[in-house]
Structures are given as structure tokens and as C-alpha cells.
Image (cartoon, rainbow, N blue to C red; front, side):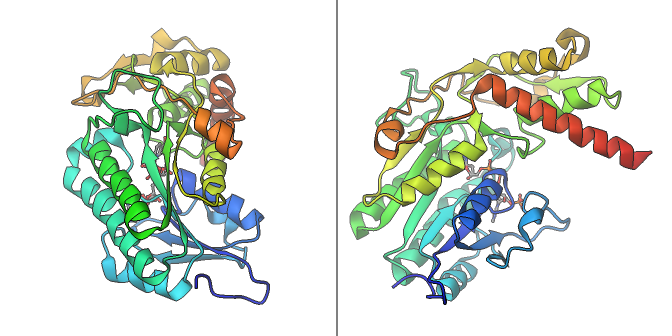
Amino acid sequence: MTGIVTADHKKTAFVTGVTGQDGSYLVELLLNKGYRVIGAKRRTSTICTDRVDHLFEDKNFILEYYDLNDTSRTWQLINKYRPDEIYNLAAMSHVRVSFDIPENTVDGIAMGTLRLLNACKELVPDSKFYQASSSEMFGDNPNYPFNEESKLMPASPYACAKVFAHNLCRNYRLAYNMHVSSGILFNHESPRRGETFVTRKITLAAAKIKQGLQDRLFLGNLEAKRDWGFAGDYAEAMWIMLQQDVPDDYVIATGETHTVREFLEEVFSHAGLDVEKHLHIDPRLFRPHEVPYLLGNPEKAKNKLNWEPKITFKKLAKKMYDEDYELVKRLKRRIK
Ligand SMILES: NC(=O)c1ccc[n+]([C@@H]2O[C@H](COP(=O)([O-])OP(=O)(O)OC[C@H]3O[C@@H](n4cnc5c(N)ncnc54)[C@H](OP(=O)(O)O)[C@@H]3O)[C@@H](O)[C@H]2O)c1
């Protein structure tokens, strides 16, 4: 049996990567639905809970230290809370950085998922498990748009590890009849996106340039095409997947693709800035092996999950810039 039966019989969700972009949107959604949420965060030397700080006062939100690389802690936490739903979002998620620290990246994503799946298989075999798979798994495959059956041709240590974890989830589903679903999520962004990811780097730089705090913006490959959606919409898709009777894999995407250059131009034009005056291309920011084109086909999610993205490209660029503009304004006030 899963879930500690509380007085009001609420469900318990265990979320790894809770301090990340997706973790924060997912926890908000789960708390709103009345879940008790166990947020699993790793120990860091500086406080990095800003994305979930606003949720601390909710008595249904519990933070626990956890690390993908710590088997005994994984078992201890799953045993302690006996969750009904497990969302495995933790990862070293930066593709370019995965070329610099491949061993750490692969161990966390591949072995970390194995550790969590094993603990769930033994301790809560009836729980439902969500795996954060990635469009990066399609890598070198030239036959877009990609759906759930498209060939996986990973082109980075990050993507290779995600393929391992994705296959493992499918294997546990079939071998042990576990309710394991993977969301093959295409790029999704938000004002909470990490500042080293290209979209956020652009919106934050534009907000700082506009307010006189920065002059130059250093970027790598502007021609890579990505299918960009909003993280809040994608967190909803994760939850819907675990409400299905039958587990499965789903592509979550907008079905539109745009270059990094288009995102840059959209943001700068909204800000009233001239791209050419501020842009500098830095070869060090290029990936050793680029994925040139990502475009998803979200038909299965539309038909079976009744899920559709609400925020698409232009709205997303504007939303991210507008929030960063306000953030920079607040920072400026604090400096004065
Ligand atoms: N955003 C996208 O476009 C996208 C697309 C497809 C798939 N994904 C996948 O979806 C998941 C969530 O993405 P995101 O955008 O929310 O990523 P994110 O903002 O980078 O968050 C990743 C989270 O994982 C945690 N983490 C990293 N290494 C860990 C470890 N060894 N042990 C425990 N926790 C660890 C991070 O903790 P710290 O806060 O301490 O760093 C953070 O909370 C990731 O698995 C990512 O690979 C993302």
C-alpha cells in the first residue's frame, strides 16, 4: 500500500529537483490540488530555494535533503513517506555543461533514476512514477517532427544519460508492471528558468541593458532551432500523465520551432533595443556537438491526455522579458 493515510486522506507526492524551474511549478500545482508534497533538495553551500520560498508556509510542503547519487537516502525517504506519486525531475540539466562534467551528469541522471526506480519497486510498487525525459534524446535524428516512436540519437552526455533513464523506465514498466510514465519534454522556459540557459540569459540581459546595468550580451550558436513552451503548462502535463489508468510515454511540445536568433530578436524588439549594438558571439559558448533542429509532435498528448500548451513563443518571450524587467528594477532599487 502507498501513502501514509492522513486524517484527510490526502495523496503524497515525492518531487526530486524541487528547487529547479519545473519543480517549483509542479509543487505549486500539487499543493493547490491538496497533495502533501515532499520536496527532495540537494545540499548546496549557498541557499538556492528562491523558486519555492513562497511555498514554505504551506504545512503540506516538506523539504528533505536528498541526492541522486545517494542510494541509502533514496530508500530512507521513500520508506519514510511511502509516496503515491514520484516525480523524478532532478538532473544536471545543462546540455553544454554536460560535456564539461560528463561523469557527474551521467551518474546523476542514469544511476540516480535507477536508484529511485529500485527503491519504488521494492517499497511502493503500486505508486505512480514520472520521469523527466528530454527532446535532446532525438539529437542527430534528421526526421522531424519527433513523436514517441522517433529514433533516439543522443548527441551529448546529458542526452545519452536521458536515453538510458528513459529506456530503464520503459523496462521497469514492462518487467515489473509498474506505473511509470515518461514525458519527452521539448524546451520549456519561464521567468524561473536558470540564468545560464539561453532564453533567460537573453531576457535578463535585455532587461539589464534597458536599465543601464549591462552593455554586451555574449551568445553562442544563434541558428539552433527549438520548440519552446512555457514550464507551467508542462508541469500540468506531468501531473495529468500520472492520473491515467495506463502508464505511457508522451511528447510534450508546442509543434512550432524557432531559432535562438528569433527569440533574441523578439525580446529585443519588445524591449525597444537594437540587437546588433549589444550582441557578441563567443565561440566558447558553442556545444562541441550541436543539435540543430528540434520540433515535437504533441498529437498523442492532445488526444489521450487532452493537454495543449496555453502559452506559445511570442507570449513566452514577452512574459519572460517583462518579469525580468521588474526583477532588475527591484535590484536597482536595492542597490541605491
Ligand atoms: N527545462 C527544459 O527545457 C527541459 C526539457 C526536457 C527535460 N528537462 C528535464 O526536466 C527536469 C527539470 O528541468 P528544469 O528545467 O527544472 O531543470 P533545473 O532548473 O536545472 O532543475 C534541476 C534540479 O535538479 C537538481 N539536481 C541537480 N543535480 C542533483 C543531484 N545530484 N541530486 C539531487 N538534485 C539534483 C537541481 O538542484 P539545484 O537547485 O541544487 O541545482 C534542481 O533542483 C530535468 O531533469 C531536466 O533535465 C528539462
